[in-house]
Length: 107
Image (cartoon, rainbow, N blue to C red; front, side, top):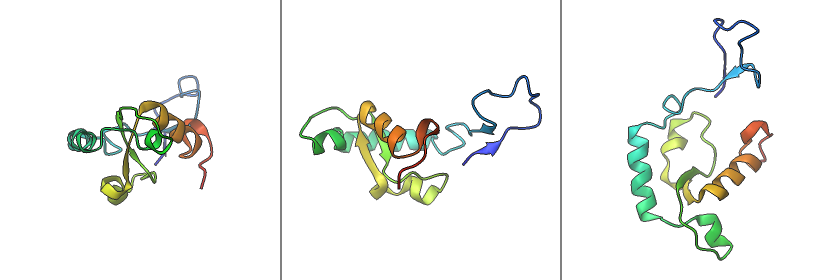
């Protein structure tokens, strides 16, 4: 969910990377309730799901949305759409599949 920057920015001070504004983590749903849920989820599923698929054992630090929620709170909170990932696997998935870092999303 990207929205345009408020008109308060002049051309000189608009962010250089893009003309769009990304809401804060809190605005995107990552509230105190999410942090408590994340902590409980990682206690139940402490190992990285992707590493386990490859026969590796690595501690998970991130609760990943398997299908990006794009602001849809039903998808955001759907436990069947969550998996535990290590930071390395989460960053790789975000960059290659979810359209992170300005890349196109893989379907």
